[in-house]
Length: 212
Image 1 (tube, helix red, strand yellow):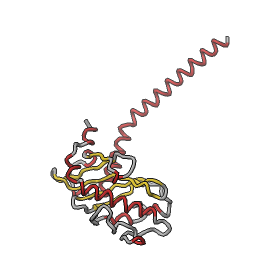
Image 2 (cartoon, helix red, strand yellow):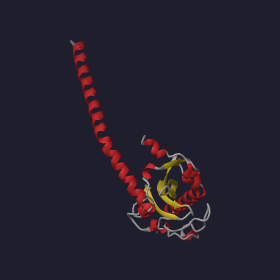
Image 3 (cartoon, helix red, strand yellow):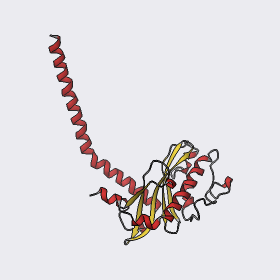
Image 4 (cartoon, helix red, strand yellow):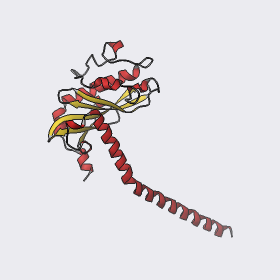
């Protein structure tokens, strides 16, 4: 009697597990294209924020290489998108990370022209203190716009410090660590892109391969 009951309950649990697994798999299959489209739209919006759309005419999200260069921070490889105008190189859009934020890693995207001029910078992910360190985010303040138009002159450009340390970038009241970390990382990533501009454009396209 007990054995029969155990077999019956086991069969019910097995059927329930199979039905649940099948439902999850079906939902995942149905929503995958929508999720992929949303991720693509978010990526395109971010790329367009750091480089004006009239500067290139290729599909940015389909043209990239990857790099583990230490100048780009931990958690690599980091993606580097390549902007072209009629097939000619225009700018590199570099994903990079600094681990020196007040609350850990700060992810960024920096667009760099061949002459080491910065087209734009955006913070793409961070955990900095609300009301203090989060002013690096464009939704909180216009501080990040101060990079646009500057040209990096060396791997440790002295201008790329906060003002209290001899640089040209404002620090935030009560939060110097965060802007300092961002400024140093943008300096390093921009100089890396400038120094390797031609070789990065010569590498095979990683993003195009993903579409095949």
